[in-house]
Length: 118
Image 1 (tube, rainbow, N blue to C red):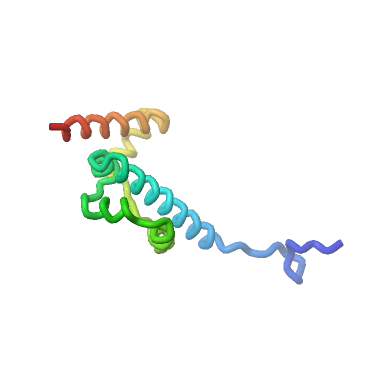
Image 2 (tube, rainbow, N blue to C red):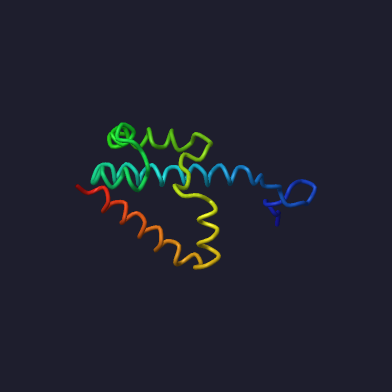
C-alpha cells in the first residue's frame, strides 16, 4: 500500500502557510462584503454606522453582483479594519474578556444609531 501523502523521500509534504492565510483573507473579505451588501440593501443608515462606509460605496455594493464581490474579495489584502483603537480593544480584553467585548461593541453601535436618528 502506497502512502500518497508523502513525498518521494518519505517526508510529509510541506504546506505553505501563506496559501491558507490568503484563503482566510479572501473568505473574511467575502463575508464582510456580503454582509455590507445585504445591510446596504435593507437599511442603508445602519450600514453606514456598522460598516463605516460612505453612501457612494454602499450604493455600489447594493448593486454588486456575486462575481464582483468574489473578485474584490480575492484582492489579496484585507478590505476592512476595526473601527476602534487597538488600545481600546486591549483594555476591554484585559478587564472584561472576549464575551463581554461583543456586547460592548453592540452598545456602542446602538448608541451611535440612536444619535444619528433625527
